[in-house]
Length: 206
Image (cartoon, rainbow, N blue to C red; front, side):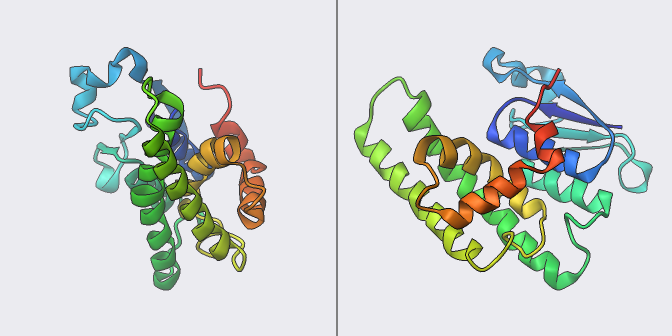
């Protein structure tokens, strides 16, 4: 059974959605970052960068115990292990998935988190930063809109690439920006939101 070290952040939900979509059995190990539990010495052995999520699989490759941090790496791992299509085996299909998986992990979420910090969490009002990151997030939503106008999901079929992008669209696109100007993104978001695995991933975590 997998151990998923989780908290209710965008990256935490990415990993939980990935595990739910994989169908692999898992249990949640809650790491309360508000109480700085991510700095506990035992947790740092699993996630050296003191971040969530993290994953431990006692039955990894070759039967060895493995631990992983970084949500993108976790999505790739559980997708490969599940073998159910969310991380494809075809080389060309895999390249498409990896392109958007890396964009979602390294570009979209990184910049959306800055938007979230300045819009929601920063106790200091910094209008220039708010304007900048709102423009950035709208630009990224525009990129998605153009792409999804001709594609059901970002890499063709539903995959871990979609999961890497969905939580920040859900948290910031829906709740902060609004998706009225992005109908293709809205259609994509709502299709993923309706998936049973998504419902479970965003449900109770105790």
